[in-house]
Structures are given as structure tokens and as C-alpha cells.
Image 1 (cartoon, rainbow over the protein chains, first blue to last red):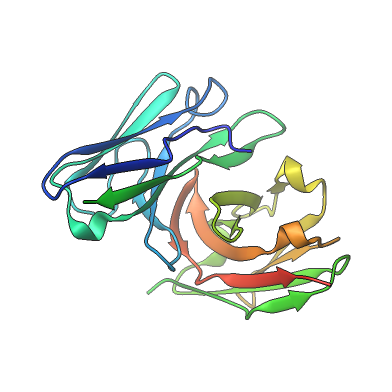
Image 2 (cartoon, rainbow over the protein chains, first blue to last red; image 1 turned 90 degrees about the vertical axis):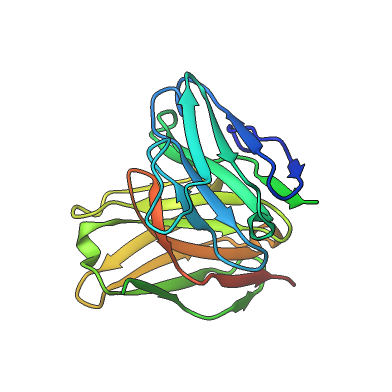
Length: 111
Length: 117
């Protein structure tokens, strides 16, 4: 059972802005950096955002990340059809001798 | 370029063990941690284990109750993950992923493990 809570789904039409929330606690998001992964159907996950708001090389700047307190969010500006995928937040959790946790995942649908 | 190539699919009986290999290339294995992540059919991502860069310190998911171990062979550039006491609930695609401070920037292609009597 994940300790990072995301909405199960989000949707928008092409060009719209979509935001995905990730709610955690002091032991994970509150004290550690947040990373985001994109998983297209049938493929391995791909790093989308690291250190809360840093984009790896090659990730379009329509993706942005933020963190405040024990919550984080991912925004997609100018939604495109190829953005239809599952998105997961993740962070280290300092309890239980330290373990890495993923969010529950959000499926983004482009209408 | 960096590549992580995992061993092939496995079919196991309940109670058995499985070992999955992650063959790396294109970077210095000992300079990065390695994470293991699994995904049950139709489900989300679940972290299962981690081995640190350099000193081979390991951590594993509390949910797996000591059933998982990870070892690194720096000379062969391979990281192995072994899961014991398999049950049907362990049926999943298993991924290795290179990472530092939770930033998993390169992933293997995944290995399907099916557990069934």
C-alpha cells in the first residue's frame, strides 16, 4: 500500500493544462526530494522530473514540477496526445530504516 | 550509451526462488546505486530493493519481509536480484533501474515473473 497518494485519473483536451497532485508526509515528501516518472503503455517507466522540479535532458519544458511541504505536483502545459500515459511520483521515506516509495499512479487521458 | 539488459522471463512454482540479472554497460557500475522495482499486472509501481554505489549497502521493502536480496558483481558489470518463497502475488514485471538519490534515470526492459502451480 503506497504512502504517496495521487488521483487515479486526469484528463484534458489537446492544448489544455493538466495538474497531478502527490500527497505524502513529513517522512517522505516533507524531508526528501520528489521524482516523477512517465510510463507509456507496455513500456518501462521513464524519468520525467527529478529533485522536485528539474527536467532531464530531452523532456519538453511543457512539463513542470513543484513541491510544497508534504505535497508535490506535476503540471503538463499544452497537453499533447503523446502525453497519454501513467504518471508516478516517488520519494525516499525515512521510516522503517529507509525505503523508496512510489505514488499510487495517475492515468492521464487526452480527450 | 548506458544500457541495462535484463534476463528473460521466468515461470516458477509457489515456494520457489527466482534470480533476475541486470547486465549493465556504458557506465561505471560502482558509481551508481541500483534499484529494483516491480509492477503486478494492471497495478502500479512498487519498489522492492536497493543496493548502494560503492559499499554495497542494501535495503529492501518491508513488505517483502527479508525474501529479497541484491548482489553486485562489478567485474562482470551485473546486478542480481533474488526473491525467495514465491507466491502468486509475486507475479509481476521486475525492473532494474540505475539511480542516485531516488533519481532513476535508466531502466532495464523488464522481466516477467509468473508464479503459478
